[in-house]
Length: 171
Image 1 (cartoon, rainbow, N blue to C red):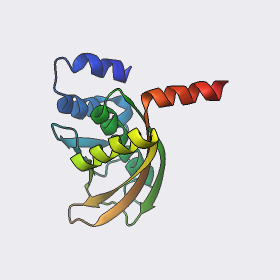
Image 2 (cartoon, rainbow, N blue to C red; image 1 turned 180 degrees about the vertical axis):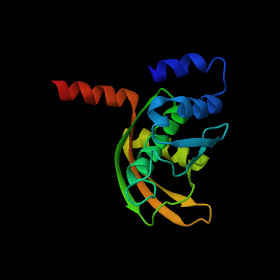
Image 3 (tube, helix red, strand yellow; image 1 turned 90 degrees about the vertical axis):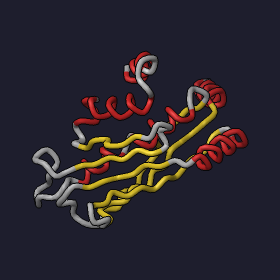
């Protein structure tokens, strides 16, 4: 549903605006209590924020680790789907979470893909047909104290290769 809706809305709204407001209005993402506050026009940079509130506080009054994880979880994958286009398959594969200190104030996270990152991804997929990309990002407070670090593994494949791989598994 979300993919179809985004395809239709892209005719009327620029992708960065759709990305930002699509996430912020989506019931799935709203439940995380985070908000996207910045999306670059090329979608290579996304900034999120999350503040403590009754919906995300844990027993000791800090932001629940699961809320932080769910706020960061979909960003890299959706970024890459939008940047790479329809010739690629992108899936979240795994995440390693390291919580460094309690989040008792507003926190921020930045998700970045450089032009070089995208070129390298395309080259690696052209050469190997599929890759596992590892990206690390941190949530920080306003004083740049590291609150949590998430190491994401993202599967990226050539779409034709992926379809053939699925056919072979079924037989």
